[in-house]
Image (cartoon, rainbow, N blue to C red; front, side, top):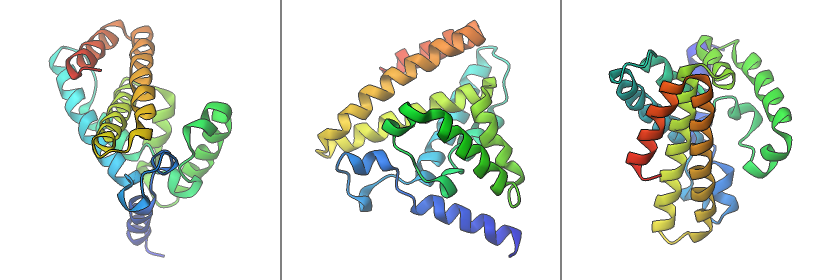
Amino acid sequence: MVRYKRIAEIAWSASCLVRTGWMQRGVPPSMGETVAIHSFSASLIAYEMALELKEQGIELDPEKAALIALYHDLPEVIVGDLPKWSTDRANYVKEALEKEAIGALRKWMKGIDLAEEYMIKSKEAIVAKLAEIISTYYQAERYVKMGMTRVEEIMVTMRESAWKAVAKAEKIDPKLGKAMREILIKEGL
């Protein structure tokens, strides 16, 4: 198979894979956010956030942060989108499966290493993680406004996750953590 055709098929798979957590809370699959939409949203947020952080004097690469966010969930086209309940109980299994999937995807995608960096936690990966959380939070907010109240649980979880991500960032780089804290406050999270 031609390499770029395979990459297009991987992208298509991501665009068809509805995130499990939404469906578990009553979002119809036809309205469910896909892995591709989620990754695209997280990528835009990561880029803009990284630009803002860079303007504040934090040394990081906005393009890399955006690309990490874009690639972060691509292993799910092989592994599937495991729900939070499962990953909370067996995160080491999910990580092992995703690393194996990254290895399989490496045959077709040189950039897939960015999905692995997402797990390692560079400054750019930290920004990508917060962007991913913020993206999920706002998607949940949209669903709640549509009347899908069972999704409120995800909003609460994402708010908690955002603050935990900031606390981790503060341990790695206090200046980065402080700036991320200010972003969450401005966003009303």
